[in-house]
Image: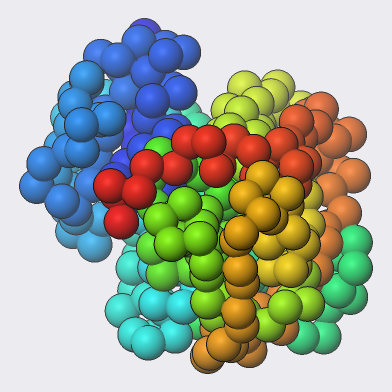
Length: 315
Ligand code: AKB
């Protein structure tokens, strides 16, 4: 069995992806890698390596010496954190990608997954049902890095035949591991605060509509894209990918149905401007047609699962 490496395995997507991949192809075949020295409990049932994605030689030697054939490159700085540290965000989000794309170009890797985001869109993009192909003028450091990354992925595929696959993730909602540094993080935080304090002060305004998705859907979609036959894939930049779409008020109303005493207040901060530059909903017709994508969770199911499962000891 060819070995798979997940870089950035300690993050919100990485943790659940490693668990799902290990269930699918065996724990010993999925190596979790992160810059942290030791794995979280959830990752401790299989191989783990401390790896700095910015150390090109370390990453190259590990992949070549261990005959890794598939890489999921998840290490990145998200939108809100990236605005505070633009130079580092650009380096982190781009340099690791080139290291991995080059290894695939040289024939060491057979397949790569690299995550993009709805942040590739900007204030001039049509906001509702944003199409796969449209105006893209991202106004955040994170969005610029993701758009540049998409261009490079497509370039390496067209010029060198690199089998790179990508998804434009919306805000991801999960209870297993916490998100860090994103603009959509409120939609996770709200459940912890609801359970702990029965109230939440939201850093986005009440009617800010953003595309969102329950993590189980996101992980399933990612694995389905990676399993899809090459010839069915028509997009080598990154696929639009939609779950559901809601505003802070709408998710608060779902929580209130389950917890009538819950109260939400609004105090928008610098993240409001980022959110205002992003689409409210996404048209993912191409993903549905090319690899059969279909979400399972809507806002109601997502709210029920989150409230039932968030563990307030984690915050
Ligand atoms: C963020 O908010 O930065 C991320 C994203 C939408 O890519 N969750």
